Amino acid sequence: MDSPIDIARANVPDGWEVVAVDPPSYDPAEAERGAGLCVANTCGNYGTNWGCPPGWTRRIDSLLEEYDSAILLERTFGCHVSDTASIEAANEELHRSVRAVVSALRASGRRSMGMAGGCCGYCGVCSYPDPCRFPEMLVPSISAVGFDLGNYLGRLGRTVEFREDRVTLYGLVLYKS
Image 1 (cartoon, rainbow, N blue to C red):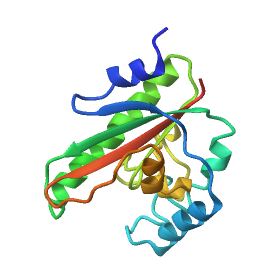
Image 2: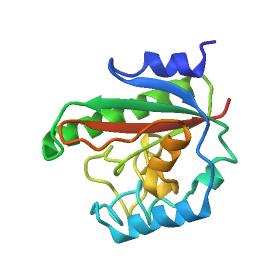
Image 3: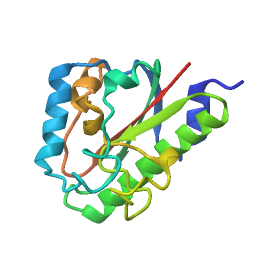
Image 4: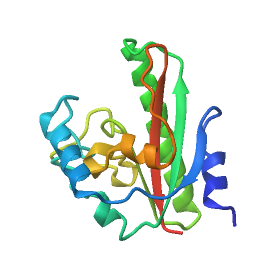
């Protein structure tokens, strides 16, 4: 049987860095900060889809009871930060890649789930608050899950850079080894 990292690498487009990492740890202060970002609704997605609060309610502490391993997906896209169409397309590729890895891991018999920045977006127009039409494809927001991506990446020895001419996106897949 292929390793989870080999499965992940085989299921993302070229250009993605795919790395086995420790899962994020639970920090109550980070969880509260993440919840606060969501409630502040600076992204405009609060209360509009199942991948963001109040639709998404599970926090990293409860997820760590089910999943013990993680895979980080990372890619830098060359586009200006004000180019919303290019950033949106990059974010869609991120979500497709996370879903592809989750689906492939599940097909190999592994329990898995993915998360990424931003709202789920799978359906285009979410059925929220009616039941999710495709719960197996749901990709919740990292902030909604309750950990600070910048702090987590720092603990992994990675540096988050904000540049005007490129955008780096991250996705995380949790799985049971």
